[in-house]
Length: 226
Image 1 (cartoon, rainbow, N blue to C red):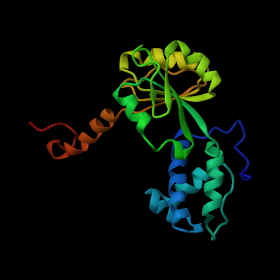
Image 2 (image 1 turned 90 degrees about the vertical axis):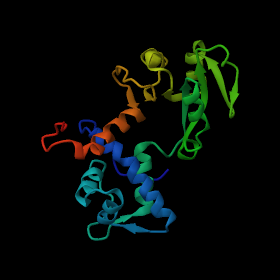
Image 3 (image 1 turned 180 degrees about the vertical axis):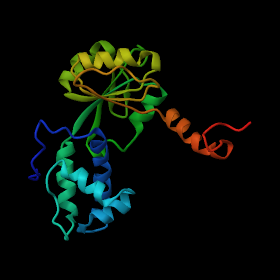
Image 4 (image 1 turned 180 degrees about the horizontal axis):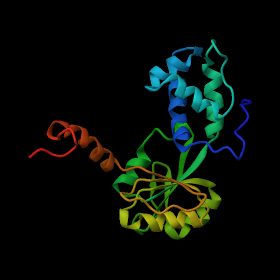
């Protein structure tokens, strides 16, 4: 593993929005590596990420010094160090709860494993689903959750159940020691101290976009025109 910059002191809190931008930096740097670009400036990164060079420099400053003024960043080195900071230099085992249509789609998605996220087990409350093997992933009963989290070293939970069951599933995952949860259910479960939950709801994203599509039908004060 590469020697990265010193991590920020414990008393320094990195804003969550900065942490959420780091994977975008890693993705762009990966593209530059494939393009055989060796050095990149904050201005060039800003163009690719549609942000300002000052924002990039500020984000990176939370984690140390990476480049040299006037010389830019070493693409490969910066990518490696950011991956170390994000914990992407290792594999993370993932447990999926819910093997309905959405869960099956998640299981069949090929993009997780190449990035270091391996779904090692799936869980469902429906006894007709238990015992199946879907793409090499076994489906277990919810009663087996605690045991499998320990045996398979599951660090991340993915929730793909109906909204009415999401909070219960999140609570069970937390009880079993899971501290990072990706929630696809159409609801926002209550959070637990020390647990990170990311909610993904495409319907909410679509609803926010229609605001802009309605632009011509609103007045300057945002009120709809009759």
